[in-house]
Image (cartoon, rainbow, N blue to C red; front, side, top):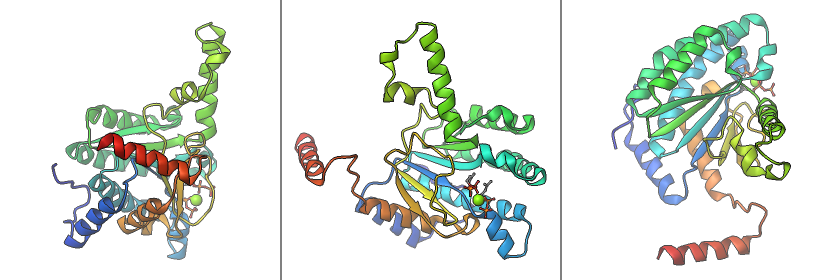
Length: 273
Ligand code: IPE
Ligand code: IPE
Ligand code: MG
């Protein structure tokens, strides 16, 4: 596979080794989702404006994308702006939108060169039109790329997502397209903004808060959580490795008991032997 170049740094031997150890040790999560939090506090501690924290966070995004693509993560979903974030001071919101436009302009070509697809979920119509256009262009340009899918959650909230799904399902019920009995997990999943994306295996939150802040509420039913005190601008691939290491030690029981998982593994091993 082609080398990945998102950051301008050459990958060190130590990093290549660390990644291959991670791959040997256990499973690499298919879908990693990140709540990128702590930009404001990072800036405040340095006597800077909050927007400086958001700007510094762009390097963390680049490094995370590169490391995840190298590891073979299939989906990386980044919570960049929540529905509730519209309630922030106007100056911060407009500075964030400006940063988003600039970053999209600069980075989409790079994503495309690296065979990475750009996707977005959320109430995108609320974004300034220049921003929405950049986003649409980026998604169109990268739509056939295969290596990894980056989904930006923008003007997104889990409740918005569920409201939409319920509304669409209600309309289909009203028109007689579906019966009430047809409503189940699978039908609801197909009406969410993430219909094309598997549920996250691993959710990372930076900034130290133990909450979901209206992120992928339905989708995180059985997601493994990893919370780090690092602020987003200080976050680098080392913390991704730490999170994946922690993930690899978790036993994902999905409501069952350990013995059942063990039996399942045995049967699978026999089938593939
Ligand atoms: C996360 O950082 C970025 C966005 C929500 C857009 P914050 O801006 O929430 O930073 P803190 O949590 O105030 O430190
Ligand atoms: C969550 O961070 C949203 C994003 C990272 C985009 P917030 O800073 O908005 O979350 P709360 O308000 O602390 O829960
Ligand atoms: Mg915050």
